[in-house]
Length: 415
Image (cartoon, rainbow, N blue to C red; front, side, top):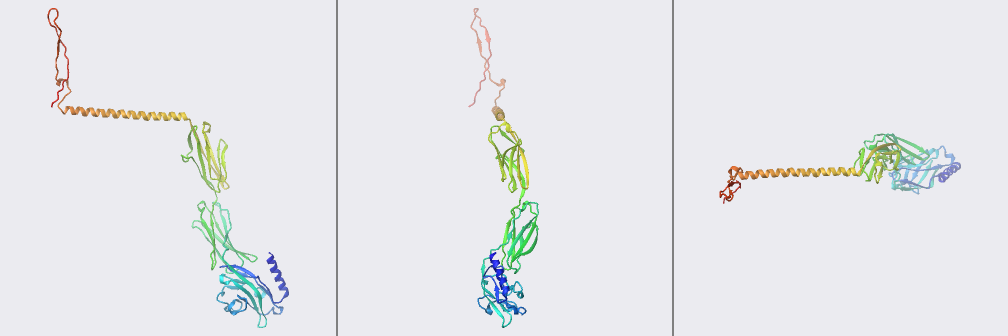
């Protein structure tokens, strides 16, 4: 601010003096590839006000035809290095000798001064001049942050500022093919600053989250750019409730005395506030986190019932519920015992059936083998022996015979 005040105060003094005088900055820095303006205002004796004049800029500390940067009457006098790259930004008749150089190059650095020529008797070199410095290009376009919400139209602004009205830069957008939008460009001026603005209007959706938009400055010598990663905000969705050994269902069975861990998770951006509740009582809550655990370390019958998980962020809310069913441990053991007994009994019966089947099969095989050797089990074909047993004589010296028949099977094996 002090520098500008000094500049305009000096300009006022020059205007009042109406002599050979001028105002120009001692040093100017320009970025390679852009344009630069060397501000310049001059005065001359008042009797020359209606005379024709020629303005000449030199890149040198001394006047030399080989160092002419700009010639208001004949551009052929300009050196090849600057031809078609220089012009005056104001009206020479009104004392404005400001010089614009487009497409700045590193070799453009050096001293510059202005000369005014009315005729052979009236001309003046305005010393000392301005030292021009060239720096690397650093001014990239700037993308103004905007809140991007799924389903809502948004305008994204890309801005580039410059202090000279040389070759106008062009701002363009590179967008993914599935991100349709419209573009509008404007130029505004505030003091010596020109502001180029490109507005991209689009309606983002959740599938655009994480995709990139690029604003690029197209200039004859540079193409700087700025990239924006789309961060699409959206309401909570896809709420799920899982435990370590199950996926989401409407209920979960837990043995009395065991512990229960149920994880409620949701997708949203920004992250949601999650809450676990049971019987209208909040059991657990978290802020800005899309996951919340419900832990019941020792389940009792009183824990039976519905448990609600709710997720909410600034764009919406979603909720779900799951039912916990508590089973008695002894009934569970009895059920397990019955199942075990049934398995054992089934195995036993199966074993018995297999045993009977194998034995019958073995007997039939044995019988078949015996018949094949000419034997029979019929009693009529077996050899018998009869044994008589007689009692001793009675007193009348008679013998009573009592026949007792006994049978025995006698088998003979042939050699």
